[in-house]
Amino acid sequence: MSNFLYLFRGGDDAFDKLSQEEKQAHMEVWGEWMGGLQEQGKLIDGLPLDKDGKVVHDRGEVVTNGPYAEGAEMVGGYLIVKAKNMEEAVEISKGCPIFDYEGSFVEVREILTMEP
Amino acid sequence: MVEENKVNHTVEHLFRSEYGKVVSILTHKYGTAHLEQIEDVAQEAFIKAMQVWAYKSIPDNPTGWLYMVANNSLLDHLRRDQKIAFQETENLNILSEGEKIVDLVLDDTITDSQLQMIFACCHPSLSKEYQIVLSLKLIGGFSNKELADALLKKEEAVAKSFTRAKKKFRDDVKMLKIPVEMGLQSRLFQVLQVIYLMFSEGYAVTSGSQMIKKDICYEALRLALLLRENKYCRHPNLEALIALMCFHASRFDARIDEKGELVTLEHHDRTKYDQNLIRIGIGHLENAGTKDRMPSNYHLEAARSFYHSTANDFASTDWGNVLYLYDVQLKMHYSPILALNRLVAYKKVKGAVKTMEELLVLEQKTDFKDTELYYAVKAEILSQLQQPEAQKEVLKKAISLCGNMVVKKHYEKKLALIK
Image 1 (cartoon, helix red, strand yellow):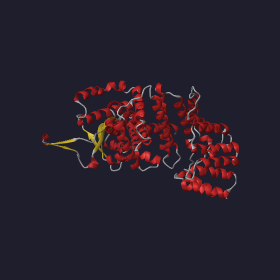
Image 2 (cartoon, each protein chain N blue to C red):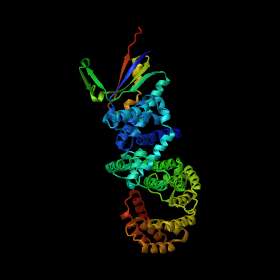
Image 3 (cartoon, rainbow over the protein chains, first blue to last red):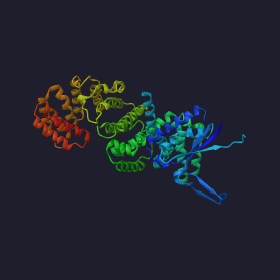
């Protein structure tokens, strides 16, 4: 068993365009999906990230506002999920409601541990 | 399936009901001068909620959560603008203690600030149009687009009217308070009138979004029920208004068929009437007794609506009593439109020939040349008198005057059926 980090990238434009009702409906869908992971004991942690942030270069000589990467690839949130291996982690990520937003994708990365 | 719909229903209405609460509490606390910022932070709080709640879960006290987030970001804005002194901010900052949420956002505070908001939105210095748009936007949480869809206006027109209304609101309505004792009754009557007009806007049969129109009706009903929470606002007229809205709203779904076409009272499928609302309405009507036994227009309209909502069908409606209620109301407050409406009941009781005579009398009193209702009523009488040619003429006149697509289509269908 390993922990995997999901980075949700993109889809902000699509989210912003939703009406209040649609945002709420989508929130419910997310809640259901995450609730399912939790019940299976697969969910470790996760939260959305604020749009505003800073980028620090050269030991703080240069501090800039975003964008951090190309706009469409901004990280909107993260999850830490427990899975047997990368294959399972990818399989789990396929059910993520983030795919409802056009232009969004999930980056799946294994979190390395001290365990040999 | 039924359960599922119920869940969606709650989610759909979360924004509308909570938005008004948050805006009311903040406006109550910081005054109307910061209204624009208050709206901004309330909306931001909702966007944040939709993101964070998706990852975690809906908090036990969503109002408290939204209020805290909006309040904190409002304080940030205000500090940045240096509009309030440092000391003051410090005092206000006590609120950011998480444990205080529950104490702070007590139901009483919410109800009180919402009530104050209702009175503020219905301030006598504002026009009726402004009063309605402010109430729907600030308390009801309706978006410009929703109001435009429901009221068949352009989105920019709604936005413009709201901006102008807000300016007047900020300039003229500085304090949010419920007028006490002296003056309360006259202010209350104005609030009732705004609620009545709001309800009528929502209840009007148009091709606009039926779901949102129904929400406007329920919002009017919700505000009226909120008023009841304050003992000074309890009044027989309020009870009658609530009853009236319940009876009318009970027929909401029966008025338009699957094709989106108008169904007149005569052809309503009465199994579609909401029996629950009718029961609630009866309860309020029983509560609406006045000491001087002088009924208001709300009483009389509620009573008429009661007869329509509880009759088994059009024919067995108690037309005698309906007619009597019209007569009483006309004697108290004469209105030519009401007099025309009365003829529908009059025809059921006295027949078409006598009704035509009554109509001729009315014509002498008022110029109905441009009144659509006049031609619609006349067409019904002529139909029963079997004068197809004359009926065609007046129906055409009604069609030319009618600005409502749903009603217009209904007239056209009638015209096509005349042999």
